[in-house]
Image (cartoon, rainbow, N blue to C red; front, side):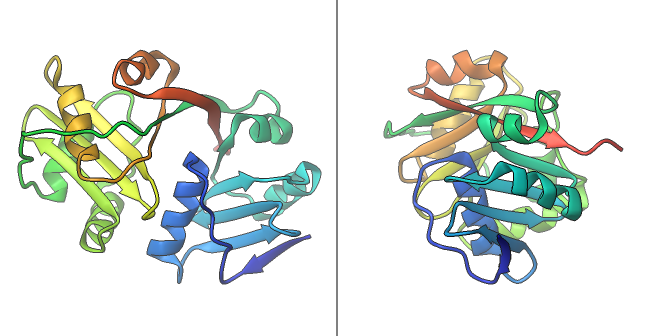
Length: 224
């Protein structure tokens, strides 16, 4: 049985879907929706129509029926879960992890949300409309749940944190070699472990920067 809950169990795994759910709970507990299947077999969050599923030992047949009723705009989870729910009809991404201690002597520029958005607005990054981005960015930043590193005109990296791990939420380089500078800059502000979600063609960048590929995840999106 899948039940709507106000509080979720404390999730400690360093997984992309766990950090997303924890951050939704920490930041938007009063507006996001949360469900639990049976004895924490699955933990589910939904914010602005975007669903995240952490599968511990889920009944995927029940999850599929549940998704059909709730009708989210998108679902993020590990690739095995998405395959069980949707077959091949989802976009696969890589999840990478590092416990390397990143250090940098380069100081970030102090930029506003509009300048950060402009730097992130490159091919390959799926950004929400600026109005939504600005509110979310400022809220998480002011509550200590978001870190960023940016050099105006050169690079930017943003990560969210649930207090246990950091999830890289976007990185863009406008000059050769600056992606590594941005990565080191933002992660030097956070405690390990670090998680990132990336396309397969970006995987070599993370591997050469002390990350390891740990599993595949993906996004299913509702047809318009």
